Image 1 (cartoon, rainbow, N blue to C red):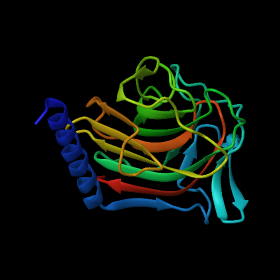
Image 2 (cartoon, rainbow, N blue to C red; image 1 turned 90 degrees about the vertical axis):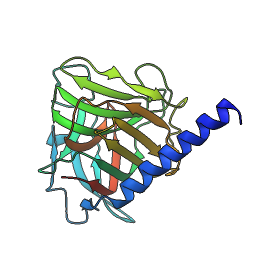
Image 3 (cartoon, one colour; image 1 turned 135 degrees about the horizontal axis):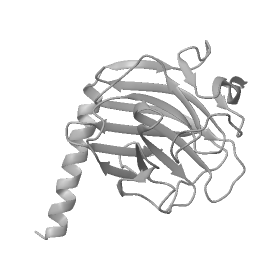
Length: 218
């Protein structure tokens, strides 16, 4: 048996174990925005609204300009879930980019959020580079890439897509999934923040969100 095959087998077993653990975590929050977004805290409320679509209501970050100025280089368009703090967690949600296409077209999921200067986020960017389509930590300084693996980019169009984030502070696991819920598109390992809030938004674009489920340990 080759060393490469052994490593691939071990990786598959590890990912399967993480997925099974996530399935066992209880649902701590679900949101379809049909009754509004009262449980969400946008950093700039003028950017966000509930939008009616032919398939129901969605949470729309429709305005690109913002009054929110983070203390360090990091996403400026942020809406956080109120009053729910988790350690181990699995976030799943649907997202639709509403920004005209360009190289850094993006959407962002925040997790392990402590305050505006301490959190993780995944940047799902159209074209990957050191500052796009990566997993980042903001820890009292400008965002820092911590992703160990990524892809060449997130293939944004004008359709809805599903994103999943798995986080296990005990061993540092961070996994990001996009449409394919079995194979992560990004991974990282970091234990800095043992718990935190979750949120959605963009770095400096616009996007719609819907059908959010949060599993985990409060």
